[in-house]
Image 1 (spheres, helix red, strand yellow):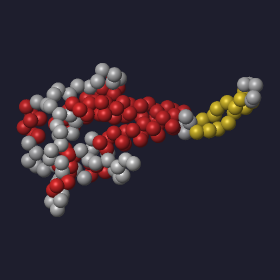
Image 2 (cartoon, rainbow, N blue to C red):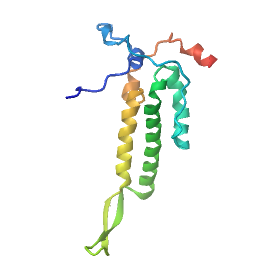
Image 3 (cartoon, rainbow, N blue to C red):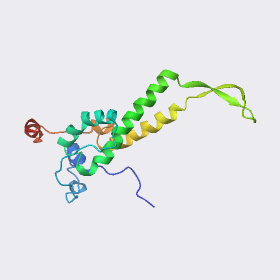
Image 4 (cartoon, one colour):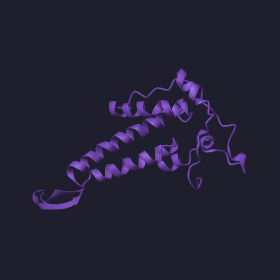
Length: 162
């Protein structure tokens, strides 16, 4: 049986949220850390997903949340955001309820019926992926509401120089 409960937060997010002063041992200070490498998007990202990447990657990298080891997971989040936007656009144009053909046993059209737009399935799946991957990087509203970045994070000067 696997672990129960929500997935543990990455150490970088725990430190941004603040260490529990009553139980500081809950932060893994011996966590493996990737080398400081340039973080570049994978080649398979679409141009629209690259725009999402460009919008968020530098900020997440500066905060130490996005590392070279996280590139694929973050790229999946960018891709899911684009697929969600596409599916939402189809639902907006076509509506949540669509008319579809009904076929008889010979394969001939026997009439029409109203039903749920198939794009709603794609929208639901993309929503779930955006939320799941976004939570890993502190991009969901609940994770963001728990962030407490102190005034002396050392990120200001690094950002100005980069």
